[in-house]
Amino acid sequence: MASPMSLCFTQASQKFKDKEISEEEYYHNVLAHCSGYLHDEDDDGDPSLSHMSSLQSDDVFAYSVQCFMKRKDFIQDITPLENAFKALDNQDLPTIQRAVALLEDNQQQHAKKFLLKLLALRALQLRKAEVLKYCFDIGGFPYEAYFEDEADKVHGDEDPETFKVLEESHFRKIYPRKVKVGNEDDDYDMDESDLTAEERDFKERLRAAMTFDKGGEFPVDW
Image (cartoon, rainbow, N blue to C red; front, top):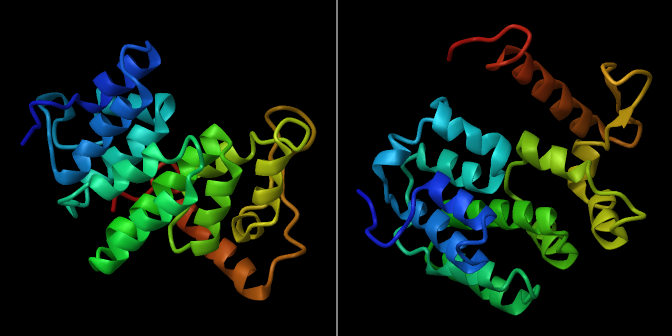
């Protein structure tokens, strides 16, 4: 099923980069997929397809929505999502809070969790510290590798507010900032001395899972 008024992921991403559509139009076209809209170009939402996997490196926001589609756990009314992202640029927290509360009142916990995950990612990309802190304070959503990578690009001298929010968050306890040691190809050194026993146990189980996941040292075809 496809919306006659919406663009596929790659079209929306490219047109936004080329400044052919506004940020609001970009959000509308990408988020429209959350309702189950599917274009021929979107195929079945399989990120292994070459034209879709490019999103993972070129537009992780659209890629995150594309991965959400694989769950087939669609959101019938995406209005709260669109309202939240309209409010992101000005960091209009009351509007964002109403959007989150509406999903909770409608008992759409999966939609609420997904909205917070997307908001946190986009707030991080745009360095919207207040919105990022709001998402962290509520929590309950997973952090993907691309979120961690983006977080490590934030530096205190360039964006002290976002940097402070990150460094004081529970996210940073679970995913300490990576510090390069030695040559460029060397491993990262992580300071985990401040982690609780429970948090260290979580990290160890996460490392084990990544080792046997696709792309890991011992990949398993689940």
